[in-house]
Structures are given as C-alpha cells and as structure tokens.
Length: 347
Image (cartoon, rainbow, N blue to C red; front, top):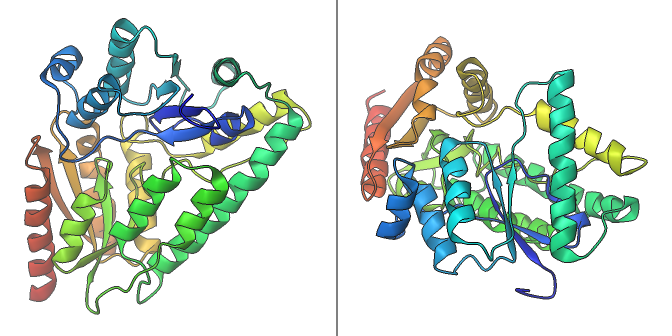
C-alpha cells in the first residue's frame, strides 16, 4: 500500500468519490499535464490520442502515479485506449474500467447499477473493507463538507470584484481531487487571492486543464478566469454525496446524481454543452469565453457552432485556439490572452 489508507487512482470524471471513500480508500485523480514529457513508447502504444492521455500513461508506466489501483472512466476514446494499453502492459496493477451511460432510461439505469456495483466490489477487493451503510453515511458527511467549501470558492471567484484568481482556484480543485474530503475542504478554503483591478473576466471552455499553467499564462497577461465548463474545474465531480437506507438505494441515488450532470464534450450533446457554457458564463459575469482545444481532443470543437450562436445572443465574445499541438499549449495560451486583452482594450 502507498500509505495508511490505500490510494485508488482515477482517470476521468465519472467515479463517485463516496463509494471509494466508503471502501476505505483515498480517491486520487490523475490528470496529466499541459507540458510534461511523453514517453515515445507510451505515445506509440496509444496511437492517435490526446497528448494528456499519453502523459498519464507515461506517469503510470514510470511508477510515478503512486496508486495502489486504478479506475479508468470510459468518458473519452483516449481513456478507453489508455485502459486497453494498461490492461495489456501492466498486469500487476489492479485495474478497473467504469463505463456509465449518459442518457437516463430503464435500460441505462440497469446498466449503471451494474457498473457501480462492480466498482464497489473492485474498491472492496483492493482495500479489504466492506462498503456498508455506516461507511457510506460517514463518507457522505465528509464529502458534503467538501461540497460546501466548493460553493464558497465559486462565490469568491464570481464576486465582483473577484476574490480568487482562476489559477489559484483550479490548483485547489486539482489538489482536492487527490485528497481525503476533510483535507480537501481545508485546501479549497485556502484558495483566496487578490485579483488585479481591471482584469478581464474570462470563462474557460474547450479541452480540460490538467494543471493550472495555462490559467497562469492568461492571468499574467491581464485576465482572470472566473468560471469554466471543463471537467477539472467547476464541472469536476467533487463534493457530491447521497443518502440511502441501504447500499442499493445509495447506488440508485448516485445514479440519479450522475444523470443530473452535463458530461464532457465526448459524451454530451453540443446543444447541452453550449447551454452550459452560456449559463455558467452568464452566472459568473464573464466578459469573454475562451478555450484551448488540443490536437486529437476533437470533441470540444464539435460544440463551437452552438456555443458561438448562444453566446452571440448575449453579446459575449468567443475566443479559441484549436488543434493545439503538444509542446505549443502554453504559447497558444499566451496568444489567446493577448487576443482577449487587446479586444477588451478596443471596446
């Protein structure tokens, strides 16, 4: 084991933390990075896939993930490829694929029920701890405390003037996704900072941000990211918990919570995604919506026409850099920041 409690790594945004915590493990999300190294063999094994997935594979194969087991969500083709490669090349790593459906129906609920029950069994097999009602209730209490902290952070970011830089907030989100709930809540409450007067309020869309480096580039050049619709920030499945009289009912309520979400671009309709972008940008008072879309992470680009139409109705500019190649990510963020600030200055 990596520590006093087993650590279960998570790739993707579909794992209910409450189940992992109730099984006696600490959930630890692996997100990769904007600019980390990519092992050539990892790149070749994955084939045509998002560079961030290749960086995660590089990290796992090098033994730097520091996890006792790994759950991979089937929420993108890159993640499915990653699972297949790890299953073939890392036989000693306890590995599980979580494949949750996206649209609610009787058949989808049956499949989701099976998937979460299998996830619970996997977690218990790793930790040796049975998931029961008292454990689920305890996990729910602490995870809700994290949810309360996250709401306070969103309020600080969206205040006028904002009371927390987006880069500070995003780093707190990423840290929280790798910590037990009590420590995670404290980390979220620490996320406070001064925001320069006159900074352009930006809502981030496009590819998710595996680290806060691109946010820092934007903010060094006169922006502040007040909200986002990608799944490592505001849309990360953190702080969500449910109650049930038994394990089966708790799983049913977690299925409800799953279907209540709008998923990432690969698994949600462009209309739903665009509506989310518009609503979140409006709620945060964003002046501009901006996104970086990585090469071979094509799904966010499918949303652009619908996003442009809905944002245009609100008079909000949409600024994008698409097909950003590995190694060019932070340069693209700098170019995007200059476009945003020059546009704001000309108004």
